[in-house]
Image (cartoon, rainbow, N blue to C red):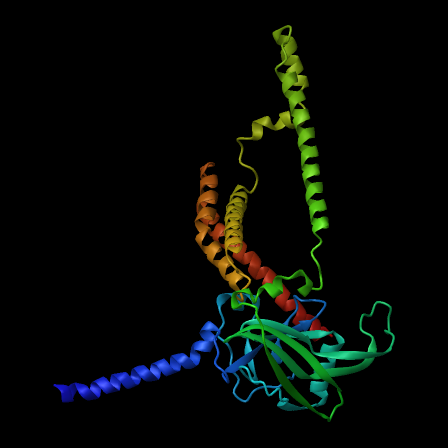
Length: 399
């Protein structure tokens, strides 16, 4: 019995040890813990013009260095909705590597096509976004030395020599075995000359920090981190103006209604005089008092819009409550994931409200109301997304 179970026991133990070793080698990507010398991957996300953050493209749409073994990070639903596609760019960092040596990524031979692509990006002040241990960093593609004024007064791009940054310097702070802060500095600009070769490189500087791992995202919430400050006084001023206007309109309406009701219920000397006065007072809103029980035009459409409005309102409150009690800014795409989740679970509110509202008229188009309530908002999003994704290729093709 012992001789029979011995090989099985040792075989199971060997498999368990192998699995533990694999788990230990992957632990740094799951819990953000690293040992000295562990590889820290750098992921590239997107590029786009600085003055239009909503316009973005894939990182490798520009002829940057491409690794020999390209790897794409698994995407969540929020990443897909935000257009994030993280690709490994071939930079191999080592945790707490204090050598600080300059390492080459690759050599890029400038052809007419690649030089034109870089020239186009630098002229429009393109930036790119990298992720290191789920911490985002940004840097500019290149710089432009202005040597001549713009050709036209409305032209934002001056003529000059375009230079591309070929060196990335990562300044990484760590606390024990975790990364808590990342800074990226671009340097070594090189001119774009067709036929020349560009050597892209990187270097790292590691230093210890007392920032806790749980607080590493607070840096991105600091007002000084962003260029555009939040003007609290302007927001408060606008809010007070809205309250003042709403109060003013409410006072006018209440005064008008009070006068109308006083005239209606005023004692009359006789029945005929009262009837004549009531007929003479049939002005304004009193002329349509009999239409409140009549179905409005496009009643099914109105029921659909009211139901969708209830759903979006509940979804908004759900996301706001979760944002107040949690840290949604930590996870990439977490807000959109939560929006989709609450939109799905609040669909019953849209169906119930639109159905109950339409049932009051005892109409026969309840199937149309049901389908329209389910497809109205997704169809609108699909149409807007299609237009936004069709305009840039059309403009590039016409240019």
